[in-house]
Image (cartoon, rainbow, N blue to C red; front, side):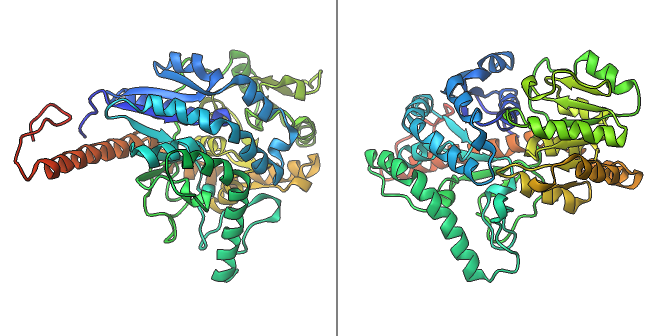
Length: 447
């Protein structure tokens, strides 16, 4: 594969740590191929970007991020997505200006999460080549395999096609109602016509990289044709990240414990953590609670429970008998790769959808909100840590021992970049063709 020659790659995203770190891994893969990489994301990732040798620009401040995750409704199954859309509205114009400045450089390539709506507007009115990166299949509308929605809002699989079309039009209508006016106001500033059906519009028409394998989500005939699946981004590029020595010692001091984690953005899981501690007591198993928000935990933890603020899951999970988590796609993928059974307690967004896929694969299960109690959690875990369930998880983990999803994504990006350069050269020929004047190409050769 031809290497990029200091081509500028701008990676734009925000969200929880699990949403951002895959872009670190992708940035590292592109940097190693000769790209100049700028990560545009949450302000509090500046130090990590420097450690990864990536240029950095802030899209949202630490205060703005804390204001979002600090609201209990952020993880409500219905209120959460609505809250997040409203939260991001005031930043669109500012982020457009930031990305426009970064992408003004010759041969710039924009690689963004679809939630960065400013990137899509920029692509429309400037023509800057843009690639979207999606981490979960839940973001893709499909009548054949509808994404599982929290709050009982999933389209039934038996619904007739007309009902499905109405269903997705209603979802698009809610999006247009919440953010369409502000988005179209910005678009009008650049002479763009009003946009409708935001959740279809937000995908780049050029290329969308799905960071998950086909066996996790089989592509459907009604998916946008520009979607290409590359595999999970398991190597997320984190530098100097290790499991704390005390945590390693605890895990090895007896039978493998059960790991419990509910996401790096979750500040409101105190009750669930208490139920999980009690579930360990009922099972007579040890547990590791992973959260950077220690205030969610009891002041005094029992001797069979260990608290860890942070640990890279690819190193922690193999030390554990099972993982109980919220169902974020990053945690789900790391548990699949570690070959350990997982029990998912979904709160919002794509978490239920991921839980259903894990259960279908036979490597775990999920519980609904009204089942988040110690007895139900213990009963589910008792089944998952049985030898046959554990063996199923280990078998599937072999499927992930293939080429890195991030390297496959970098291949697709390079192929796209080369095609864009060839397109520019062909256009240059068309302009000069009538008078046959040799023109200078981007790589210094004459066309």
